[in-house]
Every structure is written in C-alpha cells, then in structure tokens.
Length: 254
Ligand code: PEP
Figure 1 (tube, rainbow, N blue to C red):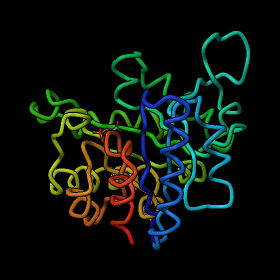
Figure 2: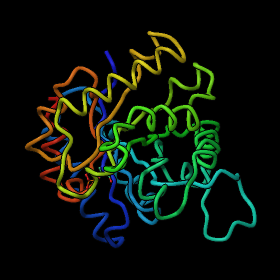
Figure 3: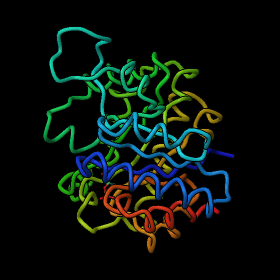
C-alpha cells in the first residue's frame, strides 16, 4: 500500500503566535479524530518550525516541513536557509518547485534539481510540485510540460533515492483560485505521472510513489479526488489555515 499524505502549505501566513495556536489545534484534533495510517504534514514558514516541532514531539502522526531551502550547505548567502538548518529545527519534509516559487522567484528546473539533491542528501523528503498553467492546458501541452518538469527536476536521481521523493500535481490554474481540477482531470495526470515514472525507473518504483493533488482542495471535494486510483493525498493551501477544514480533509483517509 502506498503512503497516504495530507500536507498543509501555510505559505506566508500567520505570525508566530498564530502559527503555534493553529498547530496546537491541528495536533489535538489529529490525536482525537484521525484513525487511519495517513501522514499529516504541516509546512510552515521558517519562523514556526522550531516551535511547532516542540508541539509535535510525542506524535508521529503530524510531521513538520519547510516551504523552501537553498541548495548550498552554508556560507555567504544572505537571507537563504539550508537543508541542515531546517532539519535541525525539526523539519522532515520540504516543498520544492511550488508554482509560486517558479513564477515569482524565477526558480528554474535546473535550480530546483539542485535543491532536490540538497534536500535528499540531508535526509529531508522533498514534496516536489509540478503542474501546467491554464494556457498550457488550453493548448493541450500539459503532458509535455509535466514530462519536462519531471525530467529536469527529479529524473536524474537513481531509483533508490527517487523512491524517497513525494510528488504533488498542482495545476497552476487551480491554486488559490477556487477552481479545482475535476477528479477525472486530476486522475488523468496522476496516471500519466505514474506511467512516466514506470518508464524511467520500473513499475515497482511507480507503484510505491506517493502523488498528491493540490489546487483548491477542500473538505467537500477531497473525498472524490482522494478516491481516484492514482491520487494518494493532497497538498492543501488555503484550507490548511483552518484546523477544522484541514483535519476534515485528513479524515477522508480514516
Ligand atoms: C498550494 O499552495 O499548494 C495550494 C494547493 O493552494 P490552495 O489549496 O489554496 O489552492
């Protein structure tokens, strides 16, 4: 059975105290209400990592993630943060390749592949995001775009390293817009991704790969999305800022 994951992406929201309060609610609700094998991950801004990691002690149910790292290990890179630094603060996961970073911070596939390497070599699990823009979908180019992002971002990894990666299919047109891919649209792409992985590595690597869906996922649409054969959970933006909504999405796997 593939690992099911519901990961929250808080983006650049919440001051320190607000983050601590929200995380405490999530941990308590998860303890009381979540009964399945699914892994909950909260990817917070850097300032929260250490504080929320303290609150997560004693539960393996909720893990912590960062939203970015730089690929260098240390040195004169003012304002950047390394894999070892976020790991030492308690992060086990890191979101890489999010479309907001690709679009607003010009993160290229080449840069992202170095970040993926840095994460993996320091024991962080990358949640590597891929997905097409509206224009690319309308032009019928989405398979090509996704294939290219996989090839440049993660297909250089040997299979024993690749099998630590989590992928997230996030159609850019569905992120923060309230537009969700239909379960059929999402399933089509997830199946395509798995097929590409099987071709690049082998069927067993593809069968074990966790592929999350992200894009305006909420407690209403999550059950149908997560019921699709190749969707193994979600990367949740807006709805992860409300503990009730987030936990209700997690509970789809109960
Ligand atoms: C995201 O930022 O990864 C995301 C999926 O956002 P939202 O759920 O708000 O669309």
